[in-house]
Structures are given as structure tokens and as C-alpha cells.
Length: 169
Image (cartoon, rainbow, N blue to C red; front, side):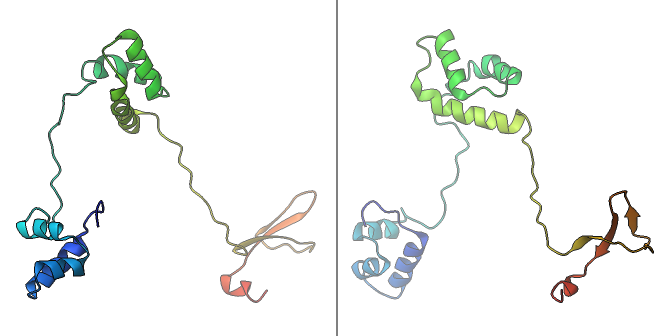
């Protein structure tokens, strides 16, 4: 199908059909790929192996001149600065040097800087309450067990309810 990526499963199915002796057209139809894609699979242009990641830059870093000297000190003073504010600062102080094409680069760079050097985020642990695990009960009795205490308004006791006893209540 035009415009859709060929999956690894389709390539494996095509190759297994070819190994069984099917011709290119019928193996391609069975796998759901075009004959042209089948030719690319046969020639080795399409494989199931992932392409290796590159470790080199594809173009010159547009922020190399100002990142360490201008932008990082600004972010250290005020970590809440937005990339759009930093871009406006660059446009004001370096007119004609930076255009809109670096905004995405600046956003990615600021996001990575904030994740590594920015303020710590607040961590919250959600607590779940299990009903009838521990119960606080009120007693009127005069003989108080050791796990009770008295306040002027009432007497409080802690009663531990076992999970098996919860269903019996």
C-alpha cells in the first residue's frame, strides 16, 4: 500500500513465502506489500534490522556561540524562563543572526537543560486507603485496656481488625 511503512512481520512473511518457492508477485501479495517493495526486500534495501543511530552532527550547531556564554547563565539565574523568552532575547541582542528555524532546537536544548540542571520537581506518592484495616473506636467502659487513652470529650481505643474478620462484620 502506498505511503504505509512495511513492518518487520511483512518482511518475514514475504521471505518465508519466497523460501517456500513462491514467485515474487504471489509472495508480495500474500505479505501485503507491492512488487516494487518485494524487489527492494530481495535486493537487501529493506531489512528487519534497525538502522544504527548516528553519533555525528548533521549540521553546525546554531546555538554554539551563545549557549554557554549567554543562555545558560540566564537559565541559572531564572530557571523558569521559557524558550520563547530566550529566543526574543537573542533576536533583540543579535538582530538578523537568529531566525525562526532555531526555535525547536532552542526548545529541545532548554528542556534537556531543565531536566538535568533545573529545579527538582515535587514528588507525590498516592496513598490508597483500605477500609477496615485499622479502626478507631469509642468506648464508654470504666476498665480501659492498655491500648486506650482518655480525653475530656471521649475515650479512644485502637482496635486492629483482621482482613478475614472484615467480611464477617
